[in-house]
Image (tube, rainbow, N blue to C red):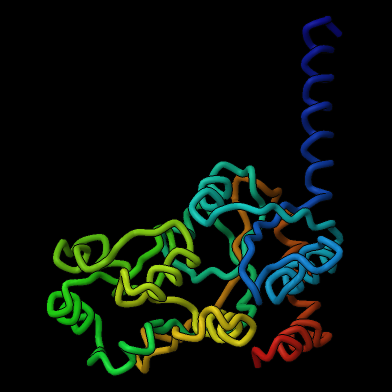
Length: 259
C-alpha cells in the first residue's frame, strides 16, 4: 500500500470517527422564552419544549446539548448542519428542503396579541389587518423566518400592501414590548406561550389575546438534513414513537397544561 493510500485511509477514518462521535450528542436550539425554554434555579435548561426534545433524544440513545440561539440564526445553522435539532416548527415546503420532521408533537393555535385598549379592533381576517393598519396608521409586529400560515406566508412575501402593515423584529420579546408601549398594534404568536407569559409576569398585564385566530396547526421538531446521519434520523424518529407509545409526550403536555 502506498504512502498516499495510507494517508487517505487514515484521514477517512479520522473524519468518520469525528462525525460519528458528534452524533452521540444532538445539538438542540433553545432561547429564553417560557414555558418552552428557560433556565431553572440551578442554571439548567427546562420547559415544555426542552422536556419534549430531551425525552425524544434520550429515547433515541443520544445526549442533548442545548444551545441558546436566535431564531433566524438557528435556521441558518440547521441549513449548514451546525445545529441538529429545533422544536416548535410548522412544516413548510421551504423548511422541508433542509429539514426532516419528527412528530407531530402537539397542536397549537396562532392568534393575535394586542394591548387591552385594542381588544375590540374589528379583525376577523388578514384583509382586516391591512384595513386596521391604515385606519390606525400603525403596523403589526412580524418575525422573519417564522411560518404563520400558508396564506400569511404568501402575502408577506408577495403582497407589498400587506408587507407595509408589518414591522420586522428579531424576537417575540420585542413584539411584546412594542405592543405594551403601543408602538405597534399587536403581533401574531402561538397563543399557549403568551398565556403562560401573562400568567407568570404582571408586567404584561396590559397585553391580551384578541379573538382573531389565524389557524390551528400541528407542531413538529425539525432535524437538520445536513447535520445528522440517516441512521441518526431513524433513531430520533423511533425515539419519538417510543415516547408517544409509552405516554411520555402526553405526560409532559399535561404537566405544562398543553392537553
